Image (cartoon, rainbow, N blue to C red; front, side, top):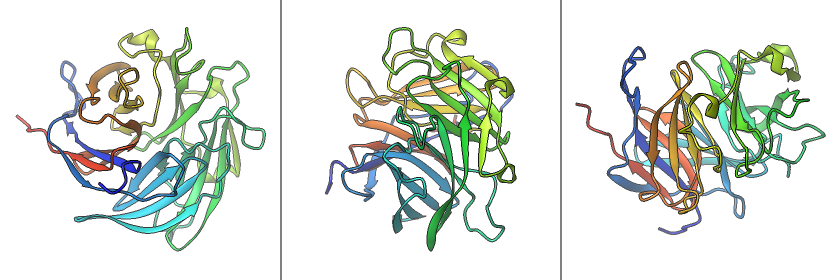
Length: 306
């Protein structure tokens, strides 16, 4: 491998069973048969963070809002261009990325991209911001909407991540109530209708307007309250949550959270196979791509369906 500090993408097979199942895990992953398939090349000296896919286009984000756009092919990844987001800033950690359900212009190739600021620093005086960017393969990106959670009671602590639930047209805020490793910390979920672009350049969300607002540990204590949170994605009724740093103290683990039944349907420890820092994750075909810092590009093969 040419550069051990480059991005890792891990393809983890997902077996999607019926959404009505109650006594079995409806999203199943495998830790077997990892294969290296290549590397990604982003901007130097900035860690990999958010990632999203639309069709065969993959956008990989790095700290401060640096982006690399790729075309996914049968032979791997073809880099198309690199550029700073319109929200590029030292206070933008760009920790989670999700393509949404709307296009800024009907003729746009890609839907708008939702980017989580996810930083204790403030962006132009604002915290817990979700940037909505228009990404174009041949032109500069545009910041078309800024979504802000008004949080006067401090429901979220160090950082808040935003995840798009495409199926239910919702925006989920997920993050710690204090700090990742603080005593008494918990992990909160807060769900809102996904704001439309027509609502304006700046949209303020208020806790009293949330569809859902709860702490995971109040409902399922198997989700540890002290850990390093990373990205997330939603598949049907489940939210897949990678955590960890790829170390013995903070191992690489992926949790499967049932958003409707509010319980853990899966806990998968990948530390032995992937001793690297997990970042964002994205479904792609019958696989899950997980972006991390540290090991290159690898694939987990499909789990046999019996």
